[in-house]
Length: 207
Ligand code: AMP
Image (cartoon, rainbow, N blue to C red; front, side, top):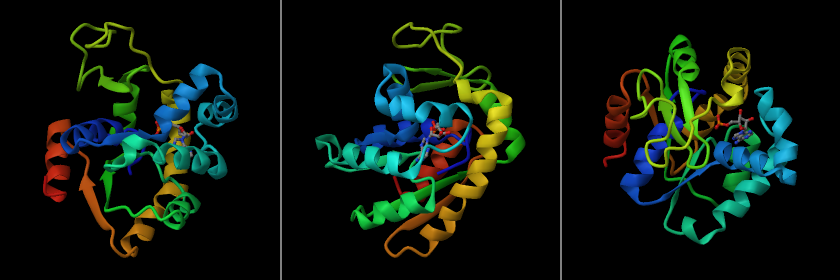
């Protein structure tokens, strides 16, 4: 968990490589649905554009299908889900036992700086930053050479809305997981370099 720009996607990539498990990012799944023009994409698009959350029933159905797939058997890392109390409760009632919850905490001014420099490679979900993690060649993905783009919802006014939604709807999950038996909650300081934050997360998880 973490506010937009906290580094969820970046740190999730490092963790899944280390653990040999899949990254399940609802944001990435929704963006590819929007790109493909599927029914899910059409439903999700206007919410995402405006920095609002996609309705719980849509997201819960999406994640249930995804977690049933073979590649999740060995374990998985959820990136961007759950984001509301009903989503967390649905996961719990589906019998999905999380072993750990990691929250990445970053000051709001720094979040805005990070998001405005963020560029992504849509096909792979790889994330760059103009100052902090630039690609080898400006404007293109290191592995494929394809163009990098700025997410439509990374525009400043939308970012402010997303931060507000995070505070109102997602932050209450910290209290939810604090009192959930069997779940280790790790609240990580997300300020500093990608490597510093990664080190804190790995040591909290004893990796
Ligand atoms: P993200 O890439 O995780 O920042 O997600 C981008 C956008 O996708 C969010 O601003 C929401 O509109 C939507 N989204 C992603 N995950 C969820 C979720 N678990 N619940 C509702 N909406 C979501």
